[in-house]
Image (cartoon, rainbow, N blue to C red):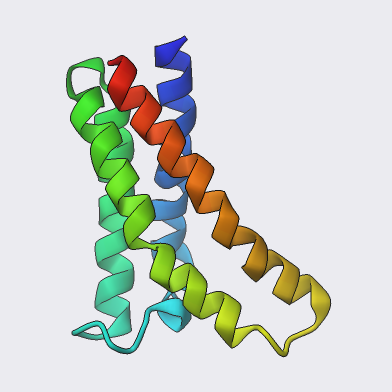
Length: 120
């Protein structure tokens, strides 16, 4: 079960990482302005980090470290999700719902990654 769960978890950041390069603008818009550097650089950096975490989670030998790193990544992107929710607070309901809905979804992702790390 751990392998299937790990591969399921790995699929999420792998897919998200690819979209950072295919459609970087939405990601740039949610990078907090307090972070150093240009938003495009941050978008590409996180776009590389996500599939790297995914690959580490997918490989049994690196799974524990990958899962712990993925949990850290999920924590690390939370400020961007908060910024997106704040920025969309006056948008139409579907936009607000999608942005607000991302906030609590980080918790199960973190718990999932930590569970994989613990079981590995």
